[in-house]
Image (cartoon, rainbow, N blue to C red; front, side):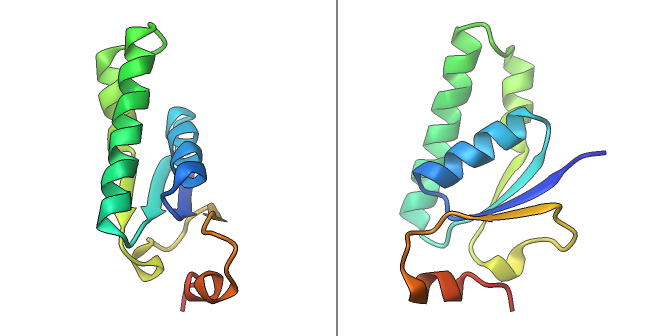
Length: 103
């Protein structure tokens, strides 16, 4: 059974959680509305995968598979239903946290 994980926030903590969750075999949905931060998240994942391949921790096909398990969404309303775990990693600002709650 594949674990489906949603991570709300694609910053430093969110991308780390997404990476290790995908590494553990999960299918990960990351909510990051900001395009610039989403691009940074993508680069971070690619760099982590490249480093793991270079160090012999993953082979190239496994690295590509890991990357494909992480999907970015612009809104919490786009997260597929049925996720096993939802983790919120946005900055500690009440207005922002309230906007992250699924409707």
